Length: 252
Image (cartoon, rainbow, N blue to C red; front, side, top):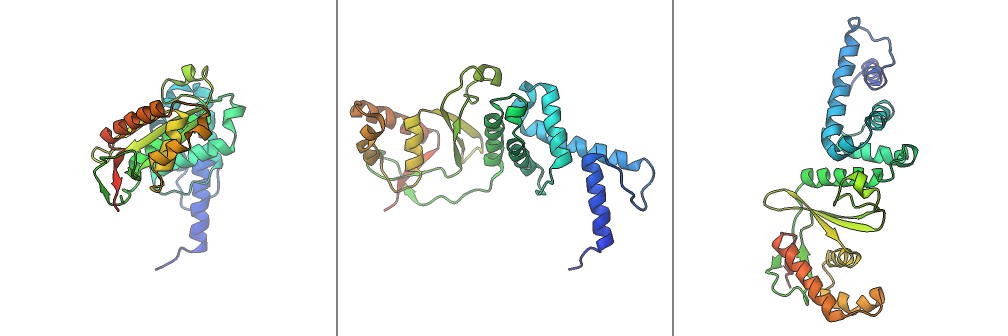
């Protein structure tokens, strides 16, 4: 396999730098004023990609703040991915590193970008292998097999329930389950209580039963009606079973 010559690498690097920053470099064989067209094309592609990846952020953020973030990303971040959709994940990480949430006075920003990025990631991720399971006839006493294509996210704002302007007034502790339906590929969002988030986190290990979790519930809640908690949790798991998240019981 042939390797690029040092001169070619240098020209490519200068060209890439110009496309990102707009700062001109001497490049051999380039027609005058042609570089600006290349830069405009590449910047437009990146802007369109990020607007599509983060439609809620693009809609609700003040346009000057959105454009500042995107421009800073294009100018200062050395993208590593060859796939357009994965660049969105780099944008989310860049926004965190640059602390835009604080400097642009957008308290919900990290939550919002992560929520939208995780949705995109789940939609595009490779199919994951599912271990063998039997029908989920006993959700209480058997380890369960759940859909492995999921994310369990802690949130400071309920952005999965309302728009950012409304969510800004409701800062607190929230949890949301995202998972990809096996048949349709659609991404589902499920609002969770702290207890239900713990249940999913523990059941996902495939080594613990709901019965065992309920035995520990008093350590979590203090005094509580265990029977009522059991019934509400079984109802919740049955809903997730109907929705294709709980797949079955772990095979012996």
